[in-house]
Image (cartoon, rainbow, N blue to C red; front, top):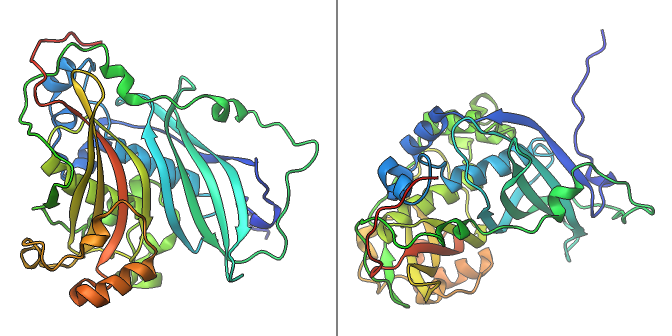
Amino acid sequence: MTYATPPVFDLNQAWPGLILESPHEITVEDQWRSRWSSIFPISQRIQTSVEYSKACGFSEIPFPPDLLLNMALSFALDPFSDQCRYQLEFENARQEKTVYAGDTLKSYSRVEEIRNTSRGDASVLSMTHILVNQRNERIYSLQMRYYFDPLSEIKTKPEPAPRFYADHYFQQAAEFFTQRYQGLSAFPEAPQFHLARGDVFHHRSQRPISWSENLSVSTMLQESHPIHWDADRYGKEGLIISGGLVYSLVSAISNRDFLQVLDEAVLHCSHLQPVSPGDQVGAISRVLSVDPIDDHLEAVRVKTLGLKNIAQEDFRSGDKFPRRLLKEKQRSRNEIEEICAQESPELMEKIVLQCVRTLIRPRVDSAVKNQSPD
């Protein structure tokens, strides 16, 4: 008897410009949003209140951008997740179009760069991932870097380069989701407060992702690497929560204190330490800048660090937390551990990610007027 195996991505045969199509095409329903919000503590009214959403011009509550980020990552990773050592970092992640229940989504990825590390112990694969809806509109995009085993030869783009039917998706200019708000004369009334450059938030919330929650959401997202869900192979204590889910938990925890976040772009996010089911996740943030967009919107750039299994009350005074780590600079894992060893040994191997984001919020002095839905 012959057993067929599905095709897999061969990094040895890849080259810059190669486009991969995910095998998944999924119609999202309300239960996706319900399951997501049961795990990630979403508090922004744009994601929790149909009245607020309609007043902002939506026909219903839109799907959370962090859910779309994870769909783009998980769908795209399927062809090569077994070969990937780990995800290094992602950047320029942003939503471009609204997603509602009933939309059908699929993803495409383009190889941007393949190189070996300077030590020669691994190869780095850089890719652009996009999520597309049933109307062939880009709805989410990001760039991602991965570690693979080292390559003996790096292939160059063939001449003439083959054409891919998905080329046009990558030739489209990325849209800014916040453009949809610029026609509003004001935002609905909701709690809000001023943010200022230099504000530091030791975020109040902490939360784990349990073993059953991780299994549920990783199944929903079609997570293909067994280290995220196969307890028979790795044991429950050996499972690792995917980087996208860790980011989403840190984002949700921090955004509770930033109140009405309408949209966010992830400028850079790097994963530093693994997070396992049951680890208590918290966050600390520093406001890097606050800039008006127009009379009603502002852009807040923040540096956020995700923490695990830390007693938050020990750091609320700010005296024990290394201030250098809250600057915008992205630091390597080794550099962060060295700083913690010098200034706060309790934090060693406890900082799980670092990210810089731009949060879009209504300006505090924006007046309240009723808006009609689209």
